[in-house]
Image (cartoon, rainbow, N blue to C red; front, side):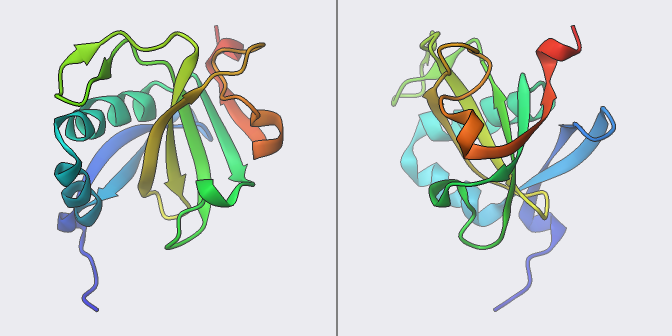
Length: 147
């Protein structure tokens, strides 16, 4: 199997919760080609919502505990969580998001974003996904603590 090069990936400057600076997160070309087949909404999520959440998360969690959150090709590491001001319908048109949902971007230990999706927000803390206490080992960043 051929080794992927950096040119085969989309690089996004992202927030690094360790030092409050930036780091590079990548999306593989294979993943981008797969989502392109899903439709306009998936392409717009990848090009607009994923970078937004990686650059301006409301929270970042570390240590994934659920198998469905793990990257099948490696070790899942962090989950970036945010609340975009828009979502995309199946035809690619913009719509208002459900205020009771958050957008999650999962990143593996090699700095590759491998999955992203909308999920229900926690009723007590709408910046966090439901079940965050048992789903992740720790919260490494919460924007509410910096404000």
